[in-house]
Image 1 (cartoon, rainbow, N blue to C red):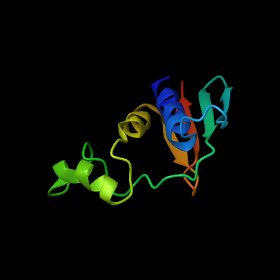
Image 2: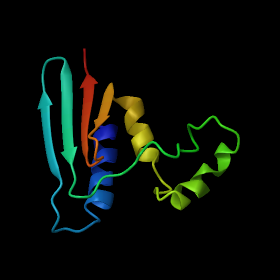
Image 3: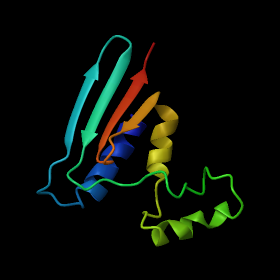
Length: 107
């Protein structure tokens, strides 16, 4: 599943800082109608809403948001999260930003 892959890559690369000694927790449950993934990384979390990614921002000057994100302390990427949001029914982050619950209804 694309959403799971993108969130897992973020967890390993950002939260786990690509350190093979750090552990990313993953669990999954599948029922007749739903698939649920839970991912928790060892990082400190992230602020994912501010500023918005240029691909979804609808404000004047949004084409330059990719340049503004690092200045605001936010990674310049973020398309993986955007992709994940587009293919699951619910993408829920913990307050700290290092735990994600993805829910996809199959029926």
